[in-house]
Image (tube, rainbow, N blue to C red; front, side):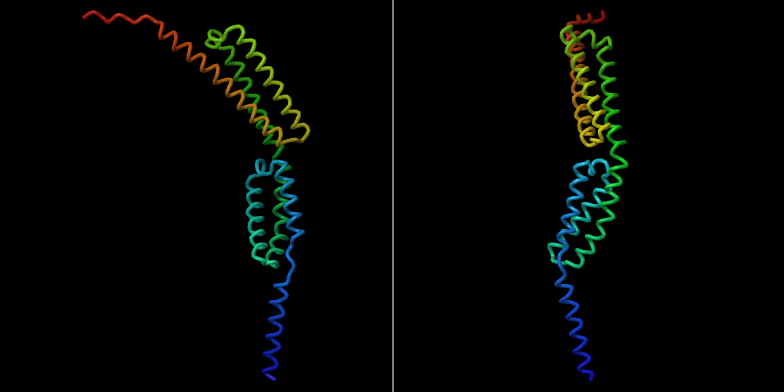
Amino acid sequence: MKKIIIVGSLAIALGVILFAGCAKPPTEKVAALQDQISKLEGQGAQVFATPQYEQVSAGMSDLNSLMDQKKNKAATAKADSMDALVKALDEAVIAQAPQVAKQAADAAGAEIAKLKAQMKTPEAKKVIVKDEIKKMDEMAAGFDKDLAAVTADIGNSAFLNAYNNANTLKGKIAAAEQGITQKIEEAKAKKGAKAPAKAAPKK
């Protein structure tokens, strides 16, 4: 009787192992998760909710590793646990995207105001000739137009587009500011070169 019980126990154990080994991979679940994540990436998840996005990325890396190792039961459990992380990421993007995009737009607006103030300084007026003044005014007007487009994107919930364009605009403004500063410095250098040398004091 004891031998029969042992054999029966072994059969049950082997059955459990075989059942676990034959568990189907959660292929459809993984694909659905990846689709959700790709959609959130398109909405700027990596920008607007970086901590949550990093958690999801790490989780998906673990899940894909389990899939590669054919650990289907563990992969299924991991895929199920990913639902909560993806949901948290979605909620974070919804909550934070408008605020972050607006901050980027406000920063661009502040840089435009700074550029316009720089254009009106006495130093700038001395080195910027009439033709250049006209071009600078047109450029500033173009920046205002670009900022209006960013604001419109925010109003249309195109937050990632607004964020990216606001940062691009800031780069253009910084280049314009640098150009004015360079002209002022070049003018100062020329003025210094033309200034007559002072006579050495008599001993």
